Image 1: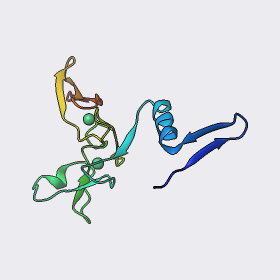
Image 2: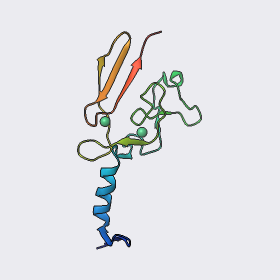
Image 3: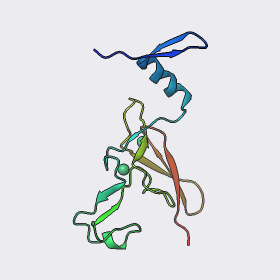
Image 4: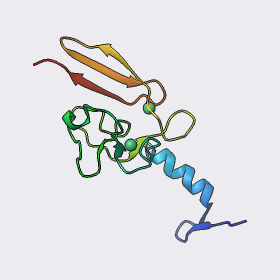
Length: 123
Ligand SMILES: [Zn+2]
Ligand SMILES: [Zn+2]
């Protein structure tokens, strides 16, 4: 069994790596993990989607689209390959629920992690 010890000499502070990790988790308000949809690549296979080439961000050379789980789902966002963790502490595979938030504006929020974004469908 591997056991790491973190020592802060000034305070004589000793912490196991597990405790250290927990401490870091508390400090970081939004924990992120590798996107389960694209495995962190930020791209997903376009498959046999005949409309693929009309979507923004479509890449002809690799026949892929921006991942719609880690940023590509938002209006101006970029797929980063990183997603917030859900309540179980796992990288979230989002399940968005949309609700109308005014004229032509829909707010989507994930049932698992609370991640949210808005889409303006007005013209
Ligand atoms: Zn992704
Ligand atoms: Zn989510």
